[in-house]
Every structure is written in structure tokens, then in C-alpha cells.
Image (cartoon, rainbow, N blue to C red; front, side):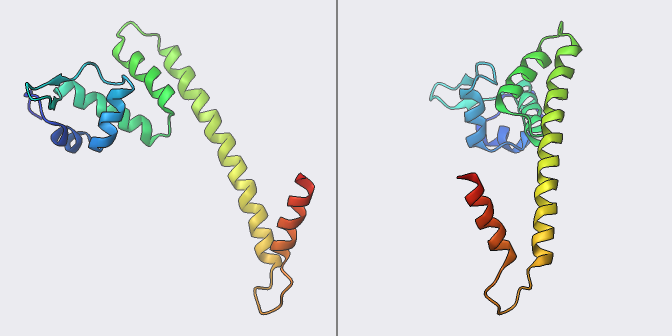
Length: 139
């Protein structure tokens, strides 16, 4: 990667982030002030591209935009306490574990319902019966 500033298309290519998302991250303040040409085109430094890669990795791991904002701030703060980073990561992992458990429960329920359904020309369907029963119980 060159140390010369690059335009938005090249920054997007180098970072793996779309130009639209790049502008979005800039609007959220996740990037520092981006240099502009006299004609108003954005120019991104090597540090900006590195930050974009950091943001992309955070997104790939499912961190929220708020968490990413905190992580970017901690990453850029050389006096940070790693305990703060670990706290954010642990909270995120706990949330992921809860979501995975909920999805596994859904999968077990659907598996049972699929097993009970004959899937033939008969009109009776245990899947629909269960869904209708769940809907009545919720009201």
C-alpha cells in the first residue's frame, strides 16, 4: 500500500469496505477528518485505510456500531487499559452465546415439528397446529 492518499474507490478496494459504507463510517465519526481535494473529493491516508480494515474486522465479528466506536477509540488510545477492550469483547461473546442458544432451541423445535408432519396430501399439519396454538397462547 502506498503512503500517498487514495480516492474513495481505492480506499474501498484496499480495505474491503464499500464506498457507501466508507462514507457512512465517516459520518459516524469512526474515521478522523478526511482530507479533501480542492474539488471536494475525499482522500484517504494509509492510516484511514488501516482504520477501515479494523472496522471491517469488527463488523465481521458482529460488533455493533456503538461497540465499534468504543473499540476504535480504545485501539487509537495507546494508554488504554486492555481490561476495557476485554469487557466489550466479553459482553459481545455473552450476547452471541445467548443468541446461539435461542437459535438452537428454535432449530430443535422446528426439527420436532418437521418430524411430526407427514408432508403429504393430507390437510392436517402439526406445524400449522403448533403455530396456531402458539399464536393463541401469545394473545
